[in-house]
Image (cartoon, rainbow over all chains, first blue to last red):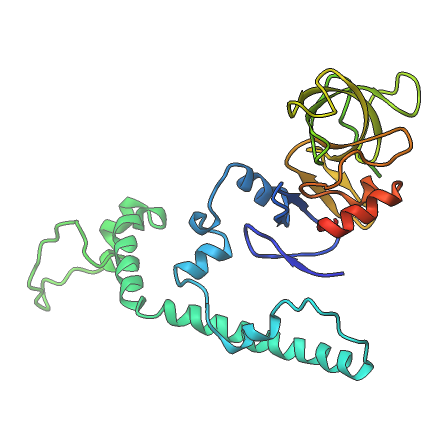
Length: 167
Length: 128
């Protein structure tokens, strides 16, 4: 039993899943599900389809080069069964997986850095434009503290102690 | 678990070098009026296109084994395999292939009946 990679999206194909297409030049295309199979039949290039791993790696969205990838190379020669080897391999798989996913997460986090100012700007804009979703328009007039830049004109009165109106 | 898709009037490519190029299925060996053939079935076919000036001629009746179908082949281990075309290998009454070499990918399910052919194919191609 061997876990293959989907030709289109690069996800693992477990036994009993997916379709294999054998072209007449004997090249095998394995697909994890009909979505990938149908995209292939449409002659789409996985490197241009945004949700595939091929696209993500090509455009630097996901980690491409790392030492942990070396462990998962395809080996064609079967190993002689050795209980210790199997045990150690299984333990190693867990550790390597953890390390690799941690590194992938940091890669994505680093990619998303520098967005804080953009996020705050967007939040302020949303507050301006969408405040009517939360507060009724009438309420805005009374209580202008909800908006940052109120479009309501307010007469500025210099309040002395005698003229101050009760709120 | 097999696929059923070849029926009389189906055109099949020829996957060996028996000098026929295209066959049309006429009858499926097994039962009278059997409807469909799948990978591994023997069919009676008419040669629709042949390489000129060779022993096998156009409109000659031959038997053939289906080795590739566009319809998916389902295996017991859950693997589903689909080929790019419908193809057959020309055989004679005993089950020996008329050609000497087999071209293209071939399903292992198709030739497990034919031991002599298996040896030929194993030498030449990748089996699936």
